[in-house]
Structure formats: structure tokens, C-alpha cells
Length: 182
Image 1 (cartoon, rainbow, N blue to C red):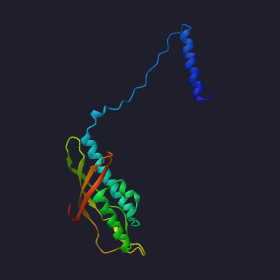
Image 2: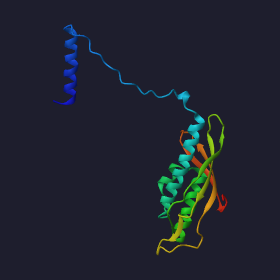
Image 3: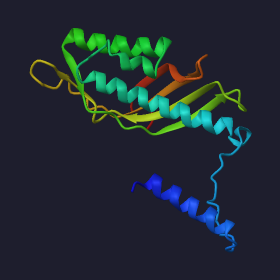
Image 4: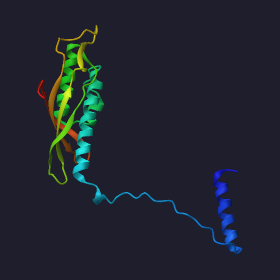
């Protein structure tokens, strides 16, 4: 007997017992988990969380594409648009032209420095103190490290904007020199 059949028999048995004068069966209703009304969700908190998440995803996708200097990776446009997307693809293209790949990923220490407008933001500025010590350039042909710069902590400021379709994307960013956030 399958579970659906058992349920039907159980329900039928309860109905028959009720019809024969048996005491009514007591049932307990499972608690419901209701979502808060949409007005209860704080748009500023939602924007802050989404902007930081998209910013971090952008860098993750960029460094993944950097492992082969794939400047045409379709994943780059999932989290970046406009000037930010151009900076990402241009950097990867330059690396490919020089025969350079990136190994590793930096770490991030992000915060939100501003949101516009403050109540229901459409633009969020993310500040990051990224450490590039574990994301370095290597020659693609022989694996030798390029240069002797050890990487390090550097400030990054990024603009993350809600697009007309409601999706958040990084629209611009500026990476400062190593040592800029110490």
C-alpha cells in the first residue's frame, strides 16, 4: 500500500467513526510559518546585503576567469556592468596578451560607506580592504611568477547600483595602491 492510499483509508476511517457516533477526533494544526509582510523588510538592509554580496561575487568570477585570463568569460557580466565590466575585461585582455594568468584569490574586508537614497537605496558604495597577497600573476607558459611584488592590503571603492530590471550590479570601482588601507 502506498502512502497516499494509507492517507485516504485513514481519512475515510475517521469520517466513518464520526458518522457512527464516536467521539470527534482531535486534530492539532501544524504551526504556520508566515513570511513577514513586504513592508516589514527593511529596504536599506536588503540593499546593503545585496550590494556587498554582488561585489564579492564579481571579484570571485573575475579571479576565476583570471586563472586563464579569459577576458570573454560570460560570467563577468553577471555581476558587473558599464565601467566596472570594461575594467575587468580590459585587465584580463592585457594579461592574456602578455601571457599572464592569476593564481589564487584575494581576501576581502568590506563595509558600506554610503547608500542613496538612504531609505530605499538604488546606489550603494562598498569600501573594501582587500588583501592580494594570495592572488599573484604568473606566466602562463612556464608558471614563473611575474615580478616580485608580494601583493598586500589595498583599498577598493566600488559603486553598486540597482539596475532597471531590479538586479544589483557593480557599475564602477577603483583599486588603490598596496598599503592604502593599512
